[in-house]
Image 1 (spheres, helix red, strand yellow):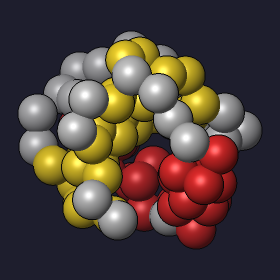
Image 2: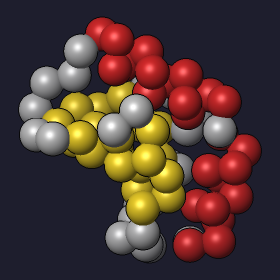
Image 3: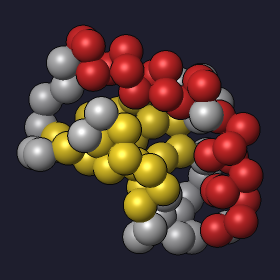
Image 4: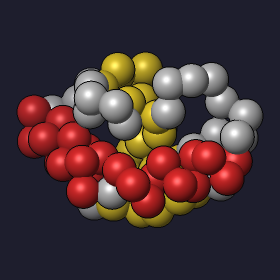
Length: 76
């Protein structure tokens, strides 16, 4: 899986041939989160997510939605 970007220590990844809806994965230390582009909702896959990190990831998704969707479409 290619790392799309590093953001405040989070590795932002988009898996090849992943399922819809469009989303990205964010991993940092022991925490793994799935962030959905349509509404910015988050799903913690592993670990714990602080309220500050939740806000950062949601803001990242909002600011980069178009760019991430373009990359998602290239991979899928």
